[in-house]
Length: 252
Ligand code: C5P
Image 1 (tube, rainbow, N blue to C red):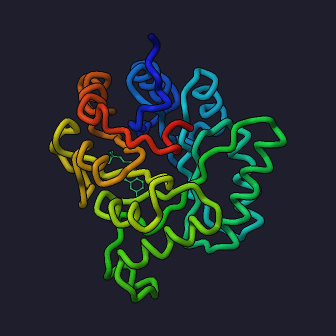
Image 2: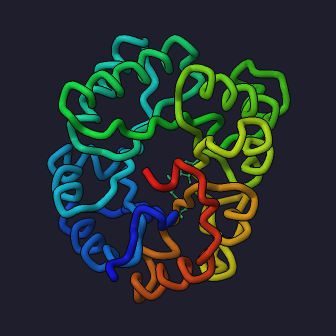
């Protein structure tokens, strides 16, 4: 029986220097990854053609461009992202309720018009590179977790399907936003994901993150920089095996 990728919560971050390398990795990992994340570096280098190539090969693509602009501009950007065939896209929740509502409307309208499935629209709450002090510098005085939860609730009310969250915030968001809310968790290290933290400060192992309530985990360097990427990815999937939470978001 073929592998059911739609139930595999492992998203591999293709943080590489060229489209050729991304395609090579995607081929190597296609049987073991649940999807691939393309960030702003690779997208700026290779453009939507790379996203379409991956989508045409049958892969689910999380287009991680974190849109943040006035509502009309974000709506148009979301519309363009839908046309790449991306399965998941994201915007900064701090852009506000009107911006997120415009994004959600654009996502469903553009996909309906094209007869495509509506992509999952995810909010970025507070970047994991920030702490209470750097948040205060931007004029936000409340504690980081409070800010994360407020933005997650705002994203949910505005019609977004979920948020990106550090492993440390996952359980509180799951509690606040309920079982159907999609939580995408990067910062995965330790256990089968290897011990080197790189620049990730607040990390968790793959199974631990799923237990905390993640719907998807995003893993980059522990897989793409491993001597055998497919083996590294397989070890992670095996570790989380049977831990897919069964939320509706996962089967999209
Ligand atoms: O290599 P590593 O596993 O740290 O990659 C994690 C990926 O998730 C990177 O592409 C990083 O930009 C992204 N990410 C993150 N923290 C966030 C949002 C995205 O680490 N809050």
